[in-house]
Amino acid sequence: MKNNAALATDVFLLDNPSDLISIDKWQKTVNLLAELFDAPAGFLVQFTDKGFQVTISSEQESNPYSAGVIIEPEVNLFCRKVVETGQMLYVDNAAIDPCWDTNPEVSDDGFRSYLGVPVFWPCGTAFGTFCVMDYRETAYKHTFIELIAQLKEILESDLALIGSYAQLQQLAITDPLCSVNNRRGFDILAEQRIKLAKRNNSLLSLLYLDIDRFKVINDKYGHGVGDAVLQQVAQLLTRTLRETDVVGRLGGDEFVALVALEDKSELTTIKHRLISAFETSFSETSLPKFTVSIGCTFVSEQAVLAELIDTADQDMLQKKQALAS
Image (cartoon, rainbow, N blue to C red):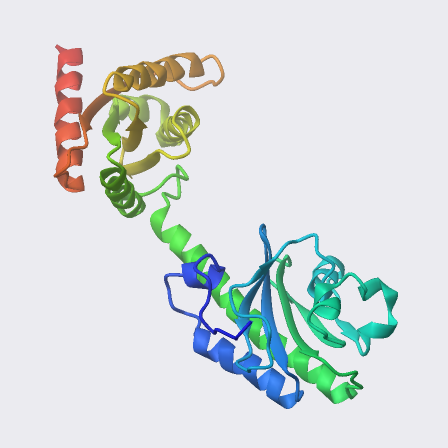
């Protein structure tokens, strides 16, 4: 296969919106590896659920594997051995070792030598491997083995940067008290969900929830109990709704949920399910009893998220006023 430096769309690096990692830098690192080892092929390979995916491939005509190629996880590969053991692997001549007879890199592509090191995420789990392969038998000096270990540390430092950025991103869109989306996180995810629904011609509804007489709860029992009530509402929402539904806390005692529907009649079922979940939850906790007012609106073809929230809010306020009168 002729080498193609373009990455597959499902490789993690392309899913990172921060652009913190320069793919060009990683490509240059892999190219440098192959050049310094005078080898026909160098790779950064990512271990995924689908198998071993070539993330970066050295840019040589002699390299048979393109970036994006995936090899099934059960295949007898050099990289599989590295990931399974978490250790460096150096095979100077695979042709004389029967354990590599079923390795397609040896039997089909003709590779004889492999030197690879494991690359780890900051949490210690395997990202994949950084490796160089040759069609000839090799006898690498100790300095070459040290070199590949040093280069892989550069890659791991980039992975640590990705991990730190992801954590910061998560903190920026998550409500710290209730562990659901904050207003920013809800807006981002809801906008994406609405666009997808319009494309698929599917039905959505926006729910707006407000805890009745929440100030009384805070005044009578204290803010610690009030915080526990907020957490209970968030937990019940995430437990009762589906994983594909988007739940968020706008602030104070106000929550929103964007839910998918089979038809408009299902909205009534969902509201009843939520109300029932709140009613039965009191037997499981020592929290004071409380009720929640729920407003709603359907997502139209011309829907604007801010307007949907306002409409559902107004519907909730009407229900709350009716309850008070």
